[in-house]
Each structure stands twice: as structure tokens, then as C-alpha cells.
Image 1 (cartoon, one colour):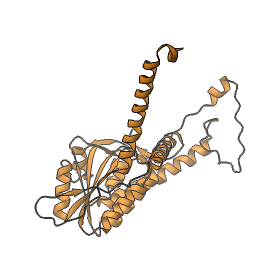
Image 2 (tube, rainbow, N blue to C red; image 1 turned 135 degrees about the vertical axis):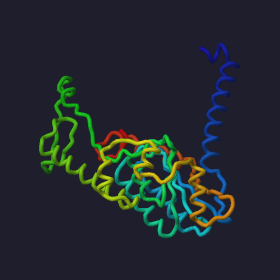
Image 3 (tube, helix red, strand yellow; image 1 turned 90 degrees about the horizontal axis):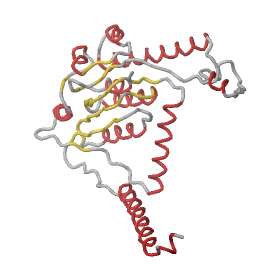
Length: 294
């Protein structure tokens, strides 16, 4: 055996493996429990980041509320770099921003992408700053799923479904969709689309008919979006911070502060990471109306 022929080499390899594992665990523990406290001394602009697919709204809403209630935060910048996501969370963030603007100015800073659900939440702010090449727009709703009926038939599987109502398994991947079911889902998509359009018109102060004319799912550059009234200014993140500082009455150099992240125990960190991954996969795999970039 290897351990008998090379005992010292085996011991060194085992020691190295244990050291590597220990370093990994130590790094994760330090990362999950350390961090400086957020200092709210002096007038500042609070920065909230919305990055990636919008699958949950709780953390963003909590951050908005924290900055809204903190006296030293004079204005808020929401940095959006998202292709969109689920409708519900996008609407919840939109509503929280709308509740905040009577008390504090909220400026949206668009990154590389702020489309569909990303634009939905952006429309709630007092103003929007985008890069000339930012991809935005995509005002629409999409629903989709994959049908496996033919594949299951080829491999000899026969799905069995027991349901309490005619439409309980609507969108089932194991059978063809009926005309009535398709009509119901189309009506659902149109309803959500209407909500999307109305919220943009309200948030941006644009005539409803003007929004309807461009709400066909197409995407725009930041430059085109400005010409259409979907964006207020062209600029980068620093420009958005400066604008927010001016609206908040901050004189001189504008300092920013980010929300304090909860310091978790190692077990909580692992559980939260696993839950986040599960939610992300579920969002991709389930049948759910989504406003996403196409």
C-alpha cells in the first residue's frame, strides 16, 4: 500500500490537504463574520446596489427603509445592473422607492444593463442617469416553458396527473397546451404588461400612449432612451452621486455610504448561500411570468 511504502510522503500530503481545507474554512469564516460598521457621521448619499436577476426584494427594501429613516443620509442612489427578473419583486422595489421620494430624493444609476424589471424599478426614482451604451428598455412580459411530451413518449414514460380543477396544471410540460389555456396565459401576460406600462407612465411622468408606443419588448441604448424620455441624463455612477448630493443639499465633496451587511455565523452563511442558489435555480426552472431581457 502507498501509506506503507511512502509513509513520510503520505503524511506530508495529508498535512497539506488538512492545511488547505483549514485555510478555506478560515477564510469563509472571516469573510462571513467580519466587516466594519457603517458610519453615519456627517451628511452622505446612501448607495444601494441591484445586481443580477431580480428574484427577491426583501434585502433591497430593507436597505431603502434603512436609508430613508437615517437622518444623515440626505439622498439615495440606486445602482441598477440587472436584466430584470420576477414581476412581484420588481413591483415591490418600485413601490418602496415611490414611498421614499416624498421624503428623500432617489437617483437611479444604470450600469451595463437595466432592462425589463431593471427598468421597472428605475422608473420609480426622481431621476435616471445612464451611460450612452447602457442597454435598457425591454418593456414587456414573457412566459415560457419546455414541453417534454414527445421525449417522455419515446422513452416509454406516461405521466399521471390528478387535479382538482380544469386549469390546475396549466402550463404542464408533459402535455400540449389547449387553446383555452393559452388564451388565459395571454390575458395574464397582457394584464401584467398593462401594470408595467402604467407604473412607468406614473413614475416618469410620461403620457400613457407614449409609453405604449415603445412598450413592445424592444431594447434601447442609454442614448436612445434619453431621447425617448426614459432616461434624464447621460453619465456614470459618479455623476449620479453628484446629482443626488445636490438634490440632498450636500455642499462640497459628496461622500457615499453602503448598507451594512449582516454578519453571519459560518453555518448561517452556508445555509444562506444554499438557499440563494436554490431560489435562483427555481426562478429559472418554474413557469412564472417574468419581465426579462430578450
